[in-house]
Amino acid sequence: MKPIYILHENEEWIVPLQHAFEKLNVPAKAWFVNQAHIEFDSIPEDAIYYNRMSASSHTRGHRYAPELTRVIDKWLSLHNVTVVNGNGVIDLEVCKISQYAALQKAGIATPRTQAVVGSELIVSAAEKFNTWPLIIKPNRGGKGLGVEKFNSINELKIALRRLKEDAPLDGIWLLQEYIQSEQPYIIRCEYVGGKFLYAVKVSTEGGFELCPADGCAIENTFCPAFEHEQPSQNHTAEKFEVTTQLDSYPLIKQHERFLSDNHIDIAGIEVICDASGKWYSYDVNTNTNYNSKAETRAGLPKSGMEAIADYLVQLAEKTNL
Image 1: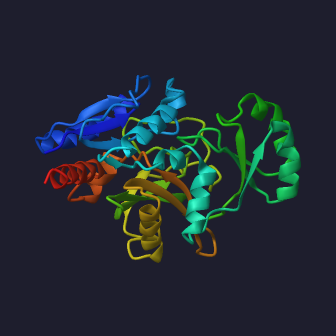
Image 2: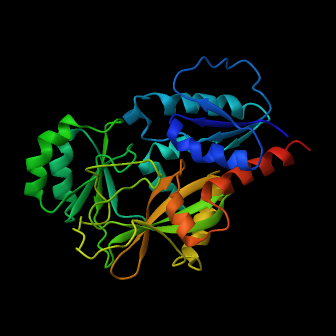
């Protein structure tokens, strides 16, 4: 069987995946992508390479990890090796506008969005956009960082200095319509091998923690679809809950076609339903994580990380024939 390499920049996020490989008694090699000398004129090892690079790598001090991943991806693409989430997928991970363009090309609805480069243009752009409440978010973000909701132009003007001081990594601000839903949750649809695995409902009551990873704690973030709500005293619902709500929806097949068209093997796609029942897809996470507690409560026959490990092992065995 061919070797399996996991390209990543966060040790904590690959621990559950390594455990899944251990259950299969299959070794997988972690490749920490932050600094490296890539001998572009050399031939890489014939192996399975799984790209788990995250758009939020800069928040962990790994500023150029996605750029290095792009170099590695280009190098591997020159040779007959299998790259999972390769073929330029890193460009979708770090650019939400690219995600929206690809989703719309696939006929999938996204929230109305515009882009602004230059903090001094934010107010005039918002006035022309003229949709309130308004979401402002970085084009290259991650973990929900920098996403904020404004109810009026005056609120935005007051926050402008702060926004200027905390500009997006790529300099691109996105103006996005606020999707009003009747229920305080979003749904994250998980796909492995380009096929639907399951969906998880993420509650936004009492705050919004975008990343479902067991060890991921995110504070002071904003949901791009919901206003924060304070939990009631008798609120006992879990924040992450596996749901079958979308299992038979046409949106799932649309997502699978979108993934196939864009060479995405593994991803989580976040969706939100407005008050009229229309579903919008607003974030594609090609570095997806799972909440093991929600998986256990749902009694799933296989966890997300186990599904990924199985998929990679199957590729390693198949391509070795």
